[in-house]
Amino acid sequence: MWIALVGLYGVLKGFRDIIKKKAMEKSSAMEVLFFYTVISVLFVTPEIKNALNIDFHNIGFIMIKSVIIFIAWICSFKAIKKLPIGFYGIMDMSRVIFATALGVIILRETLTEHKIVGMALVLIGLLFVNMGKKSGGDKTKPIYIVFVLISCLCNATSELLDKMLMRNMNSGQLQFWYMFFLLILYLGYMIVTKTKIRWSMIFKNYWILILSILFVVGDKALFIACSKPESTVVAMTLIKQCSVLITILGGRLIFKEKRTLYKMMCAVVIIAGIIFAVL
Image (tube, rainbow, N blue to C red; front, side):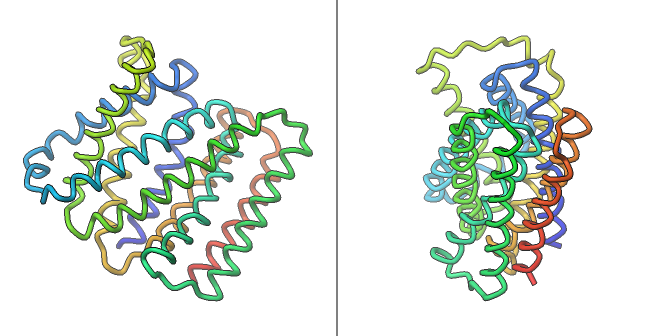
């Protein structure tokens, strides 16, 4: 069951990345981030009674998770806005490396020979996609690649915290509190940086509403999977990477991106590594 839930999260994540890019055609990154969070908080508000029953010594750890996701989302949205979505989807798979390292070092998950070979294939696939981007004459600034990697590291750390937090709470409690803290963080960020947003966009940009629905459903599935004792950070991170197939196809069909076959071949190498590592 937990594998199916993580697979569902991966599929929804692929669609979410595409919709983020569509949403930012009409709105700024901060508008999408803020309204996306506001709507998501409204969706999880029915969990407030459940959330108040939490053991409050866990609140600090949820706040840490929120800060990590706050950084991850700002970096990923900036990268998605500027990078081809297919390329972003493949680079986002580098979170496998970070999650594996964290799972092994902190949770003492076993790093077998299969996983080592699998990780090597993942690295080879990521290397090929970067080489292909350069040979294709793309002028993308390296800073956006850095943003993707920062996002991957933060997301991998968040996934580790999810696994640890779900030992002491249920999915509704975690989802409510971390979304609530995210909303506070974005409000604080906009006040400090004096970022202006167009409030009308919450009604005009319907992509934001779709994004929020996919986010709430996907996270619910992921948190339930994290609560299962047999699930591991490494395995869950590997399964999530099915999202890359959707982002590559979405890049071709929706954004008319090129070099789809090359990207797909790089993704196949990475997925082969993931399958090898899971077996």
